[in-house]
Length: 87
Image 1 (spheres, rainbow, N blue to C red):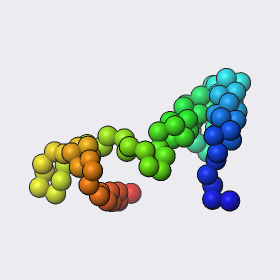
Image 2 (image 1 turned 90 degrees about the vertical axis):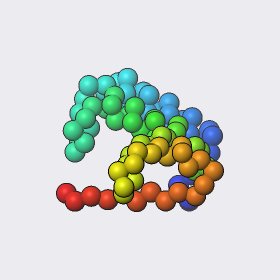
Image 3 (image 1 turned 30 degrees about the vertical axis):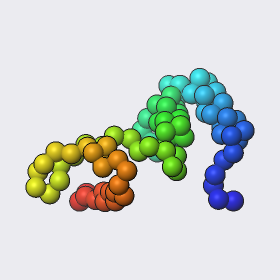
Protein backbone atom coordinates (compact mmCIF):
# COMPACT_ATOMS: atom_id res chain seq x y z
CA UNK A 1 0.00 0.00 0.00
CA UNK A 2 0.91 3.61 0.44
CA UNK A 3 2.27 3.16 3.97
CA UNK A 4 -0.61 5.07 5.53
CA UNK A 5 -2.53 3.59 8.46
CA UNK A 6 -6.20 4.17 9.07
CA UNK A 7 -7.45 5.21 12.52
CA UNK A 8 -8.01 1.63 13.74
CA UNK A 9 -4.57 0.49 12.54
CA UNK A 10 -2.92 3.50 14.16
CA UNK A 11 -4.70 2.80 17.47
CA UNK A 12 -3.60 -0.85 17.35
CA UNK A 13 0.01 0.13 16.57
CA UNK A 14 0.09 2.61 19.45
CA UNK A 15 -1.23 -0.07 21.82
CA UNK A 16 1.47 -2.51 20.65
CA UNK A 17 4.19 0.12 21.10
CA UNK A 18 2.99 0.97 24.61
CA UNK A 19 3.02 -2.74 25.51
CA UNK A 20 6.56 -3.05 24.12
CA UNK A 21 7.69 -0.09 26.24
CA UNK A 22 6.02 -1.51 29.35
CA UNK A 23 7.36 -5.05 28.88
CA UNK A 24 10.92 -4.14 27.85
CA UNK A 25 11.39 -0.58 29.16
CA UNK A 26 15.08 -0.88 30.06
CA UNK A 27 16.13 -3.40 27.40
CA UNK A 28 18.36 -1.98 24.66
CA UNK A 29 17.13 -1.71 21.08
CA UNK A 30 19.62 -3.53 18.81
CA UNK A 31 21.85 -1.13 16.82
CA UNK A 32 20.05 1.92 18.30
CA UNK A 33 21.96 2.51 21.54
CA UNK A 34 18.79 3.40 23.42
CA UNK A 35 16.16 1.66 25.52
CA UNK A 36 12.82 0.47 24.19
CA UNK A 37 11.09 2.98 26.45
CA UNK A 38 12.94 5.90 24.82
CA UNK A 39 12.58 4.45 21.32
CA UNK A 40 8.82 4.03 21.78
CA UNK A 41 8.49 7.60 23.11
CA UNK A 42 10.23 8.97 20.00
CA UNK A 43 8.19 6.75 17.71
CA UNK A 44 4.91 7.80 19.34
CA UNK A 45 5.89 11.47 18.98
CA UNK A 46 6.44 10.89 15.28
CA UNK A 47 3.11 9.10 14.85
CA UNK A 48 1.15 11.70 16.79
CA UNK A 49 2.82 14.95 15.67
CA UNK A 50 4.51 14.52 12.29
CA UNK A 51 1.59 13.94 9.95
CA UNK A 52 1.01 15.15 6.44
CA UNK A 53 -1.00 18.35 6.66
CA UNK A 54 -0.25 18.92 10.35
CA UNK A 55 1.40 22.07 11.67
CA UNK A 56 5.17 21.61 11.61
CA UNK A 57 7.04 21.61 14.91
CA UNK A 58 8.79 24.86 15.83
CA UNK A 59 12.30 25.19 14.44
CA UNK A 60 14.62 28.06 15.31
CA UNK A 61 17.80 29.02 13.53
CA UNK A 62 19.74 31.75 11.81
CA UNK A 63 19.55 32.82 8.20
CA UNK A 64 22.65 33.30 6.03
CA UNK A 65 23.12 36.80 7.47
CA UNK A 66 23.06 35.51 11.06
CA UNK A 67 19.58 36.89 11.79
CA UNK A 68 17.55 34.67 14.13
CA UNK A 69 14.21 33.35 12.88
CA UNK A 70 11.54 30.82 13.78
CA UNK A 71 9.66 28.62 11.37
CA UNK A 72 6.40 30.05 12.70
CA UNK A 73 7.49 33.47 11.35
CA UNK A 74 6.64 32.07 7.92
CA UNK A 75 3.22 30.58 8.76
CA UNK A 76 0.98 30.61 5.69
CA UNK A 77 3.91 30.73 3.27
CA UNK A 78 5.61 27.94 1.36
CA UNK A 79 8.88 27.02 3.07
CA UNK A 80 11.58 24.63 1.92
CA UNK A 81 13.96 23.37 4.59
CA UNK A 82 17.29 22.06 3.38
CA UNK A 83 19.16 20.15 6.09
CA UNK A 84 22.73 19.19 5.35
CA UNK A 85 26.07 18.86 7.02
CA UNK A 86 29.52 17.35 6.87
CA UNK A 87 30.11 14.24 8.94
